[in-house]
Length: 210
Image (cartoon, rainbow, N blue to C red; front, side, top):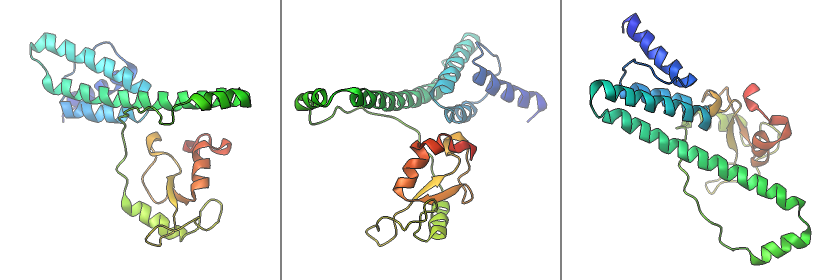
């Protein structure tokens, strides 16, 4: 790749990050996909900004080439769906937490009245989300290292799986979504209680800094 081409690729990525209104560099659809995959790791807001920039770029290219730019539109639509899934997931979680906080402030009589008339079967939502394809060797090594003991509290696994293996959950010290590595060094085997604390406990508000 020539220095000029490399500069164009880097400039396009920076433009997406910054939400530039328009840029003229033409690069392949698979490169755009890699950019969006990376940006999506930072959450819904950066991805939304990048998609707006990407769409403006597609429209600009169409005005120049007079072509449909179908491959670019396909990548754009793919990540629009990713964004929708991220947004729905975040909204559902935030709404539930807010509703629980409100319920806790209600009187016992108010809660009982609502429970008496509440639907027994909850509404359902369809959520599209991204997942990491984790390395099974990392999980195996961490579980073997723990040898059935939680590496946080030092207690034995709370129960055994049907095949007799101690039940522990492998947690990344620095989250994969925050750029953490899927390595043995960045992982720890935890009992379910300690694992939940790592995600929701006051002492672990940001595991990314640990």
